[in-house]
Image (spheres, rainbow, N blue to C red):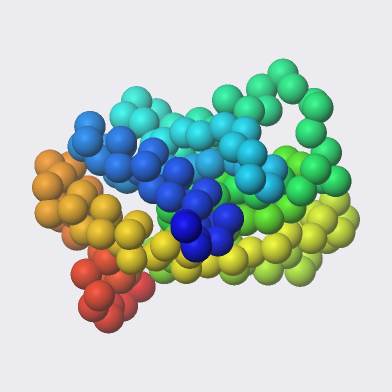
Length: 174
Ligand SMILES: [Zn+2]
C-alpha cells in the first residue's frame, strides 16, 4: 500500500515534470495544480527563450488562460519543486489558489516568506497556506545533477550562490 500523503503524491508528479526538464538540460523545476487528489494541470520550466517560461507560469497559462471557472472555494493547491520567485509568487497571489506546497527552498530568489504587510487591500485578505520541504531531498538531487552537468554560463560562473550552496549542502553568504 502506498503510504505517501496526497501532498507527497502530487509532489511526485511535479518532480516527474522537473526530471523531464532535466532530460533536456533545462533547470529542473516542475509544477502541478491540484484540487485534492485531482490533477488539473502540470508543467515544467522550458527552454529559456524568454524570462517568463518558469514552470509555474507555464502551468498558469495552461490552466487559467481564458478560464474563469475556478474560485478560491475550490481549494486549489500549487505544487512546485522550488520555492516560487517574485513573478510566480505574485501571480499565484492573483489567482484563486489557496495552498502552496514546495519542495526546496530558494534562499537566493524564493519569495514564499515575503510578508504582505503594507501591500494594498486586495492582497491583505487572501490567506495562503504555505508548506515547504515536501520531497525536498528528491528535488535537491535533481538540482545537484543539473549543476553538475549544465553548460549555462550563469550557473558555471557561480550564479545564485546561496541556492547553489543549499543544493550542495554547504553554507554560503547570500
Ligand atoms: Zn518563477
